[in-house]
Length: 326
Image (cartoon, rainbow, N blue to C red; front, side, top):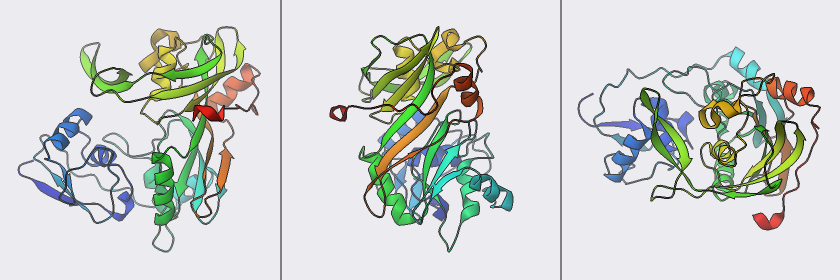
């Protein structure tokens, strides 16, 4: 691609982070390369310098510098009846402002270079009166569980502010290898994205760090039950960094089972599904219209439900988090 180009943010991209927007539209651009463009002011939004976490608004213009090896622009996923039916089967709560979904393991939240089916595209099938449900947070593709989606632009803004302002409490359930010592506590370990040599190539990973690019990362955890060589752990991310729980569990010496990326061989347990054993169990957040605290939970499903049944873990267990840790 030669020369500078300008793209307008589409209505369906409202509220998307700039780095996520680039990953969707220009998947060949690595995160480090985007950060370099931003530092030099080569990528701009609405004419101004911005950071990678900048939330986009419909109609804003994004300046894009010359990029090499850019594939042809992908056509957006077209809304269809099958998508609408699939999303409705995931709904566990709905009112005029929000939809709560129980995301399946393996379903991507947003698109990428090799991802044609994703939740964001499927949500377009629920558009009504010119409003389509909007993402306000993310879950990794391999993580299942509770997701909150805004039904209106105003709800998306208010929920987005709550997520950014640490006004949302999340509890994840994880099956980890080993038993953490102590049985409960707080992991305060800064992390950063870095290019790591893996086998014969390089791969971007999140790693513990203490340099200028290190970001504060804090996780509370509690041992709920143990079964020999594995444990049922409740984890609460005080900060919301990418792959934070997976990196922190591995750093504690109790990697999440099925997490070969960060846990290595120690994350493999014989007789247990090799898929990632991480699930967003519940959230407490201010309702975007009333402001009142609301708590929702998602029931286990898929391979993690099988795991909990196999070890006879309590599927209704509840973690009690000390308020003074927030």
